[in-house]
Length: 191
Image (cartoon, rainbow, N blue to C red; front, side):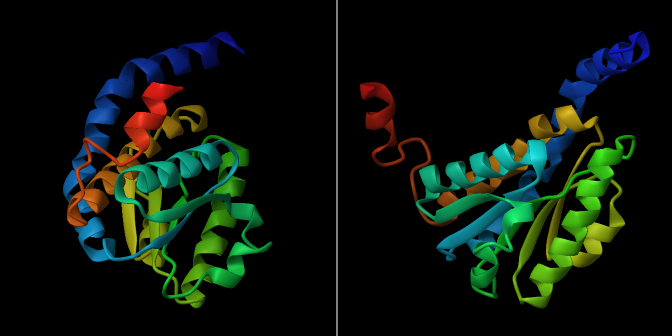
């Protein structure tokens, strides 16, 4: 890694606490989205490359605290199975952030835009996690939650925040105790 790139990443890491604080501005929005979706029993969470594990974790958090069936899946693989399930009854949560300085990130982003357009044609309701200032996603998705712009490798740190808040508010809206999810405490402490 060049000295210039190293300096940039150190600067970005030092700015991360402030950007995390800005990300928390989505609390009310996550609560509002959960109010709309709290009676839904199935979700599909999607992400590409480094964002796929974040999508899986978002699905896991939703399962753990709100007892909703949720699957994390690689966005590029939806044509191999999940696509048949996507309709007005299966909301899609897609991580579609971008690092405008990273060519690979921009390519993945363009593909995600095309996926979102396809999901909307299938009547799915789409909740997108996107980078601040992204007007294209806001036009396509039903709901867009923005996170600050950071390099690709730091995006997961910000992306997970709205997914966890969404899971929290889904549980609250369903009347569940988020501090004592059933069976989870026993399985974590007994292993």
